Length: 327
Image (cartoon, rainbow, N blue to C red; front, side, top):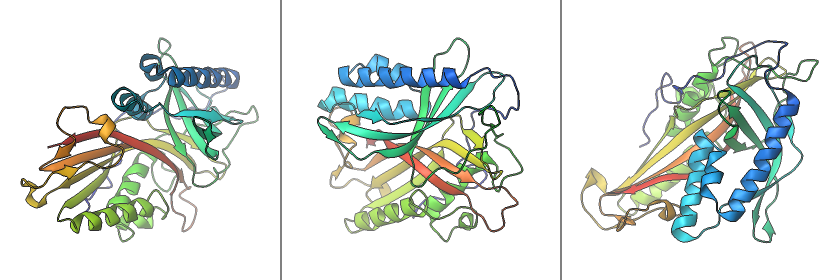
């Protein structure tokens, strides 16, 4: 059975997110955001093409660092090229901030490029952050959209408004959105949390996938457990035009495959995609079990508390294998 995540803890981030600020003073301008975005696109492409792990990891942080680190690990262990991307026309959402940390959000079509092959473009949200004057800009997360973004509230000068993680005007305080999502992923549509969060690919969809895996492993006389839990990483929120918020946050999906009772048994092959990141010799299979964990970045639309019958919707999610261990 899936482990249960308490709404008061499971999806909460312990890191202090950027606070809501209303100010006519812009420590970060829209022009500067455009420049930093362009610099990142060029630097990331060059690092991926050259297999330059040092440079490639220096321009990402938090959830994005975990995912990109796994890609460079796969390059060093199996020669798998680091994923390269092509970007379309970006839309910038720059909150009016008077102090650090500085951050902004970009919505942009992203195409995965594999050799001469190009996948269909996917609408994606990306979060950029600079935590102090001495720090450089990094991408902290990106998530592929399942549906269009809602209109973001913009002032007459084009700047957005950041939202406090404890904002009481929303259906869910932003720092509880992840916990609510986690309860549905872990328990399914019958979870009490389903009254506050909508079904979709990143909620009931993840539960359905995990449940199917559990049944599949049970047929092999193995147990499969999963737990979506909060990450101690910054989250970000922008006010939407209807008074709600777009909330961006990271989560970990932790899974375990083992013999019932954690006893010795036949070797358990590790799931696809994890072999390149398990680098300890002679541990490509487990005779007790296998831990296979993902890092995800999500985006959710949190409605205003006055919206009758509304639910929060997780509208974007992307992730990848970031940790594997056999025992």
